[in-house]
Amino acid sequence: MSVKFKEPSQNADDSPIKKNLPMRRSSMFTKLAQSFKRSGGERGAGLEDLRGTHGADFEEECTIKRGNSGCGCLGNNKNSINLVLVKATFCFVFKDEGASAPRYAIRLTQMRAKRQNLTVVLETNAGDVEYEFSFTEEDRAKEFVDVINKQAAIGESNEVRKRLGHQHLLKLTKSIRFAE
Image (cartoon, rainbow, N blue to C red; front, side, top):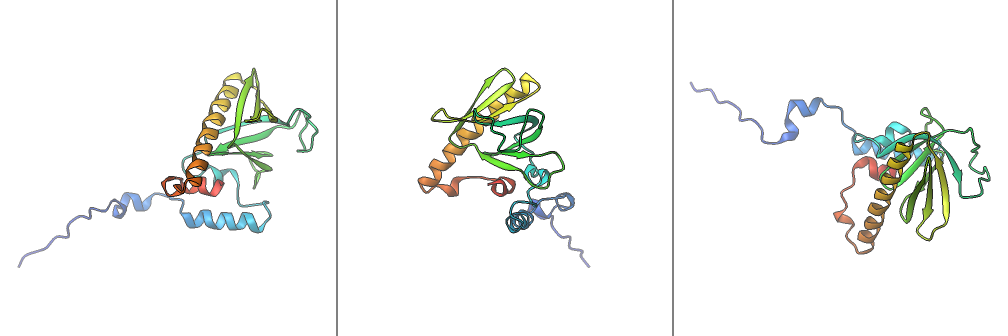
């Protein structure tokens, strides 16, 4: 009597190690997106959801002023600290760490950032100032400028690919597609 052994699977997805790892599935992001839309933007797009499995490109607390006017239309005053999270080609502004959804999102495509000491000015490619971010540390302001300009360039190249019909070449993670 001979005993036959089962050959190990060549498929990496069948490994017991991979099966035990917590994974974020696309169905989870689909449910979160639906929840966000149904609630009118009040829930479903929290910090953890937007961070995904790869984290944010940048995350820091700062004060934000809209344009040069500082009209306060975003509910900000000099003492209002907001949490800024940059994920892919969007900058999400949260009231604080515990917020269930962002206050608003800024599309970084066709934008550029310039640093003036602790203040970062976000302007359109035409030169119009849209937002001013004030940080407490100069190195974080410099990092923010680098991330914003890099993600804006990526967003512009992605738009060109889409216009040319090459959207199938875009390799976006599930959390980035959710952020968009």
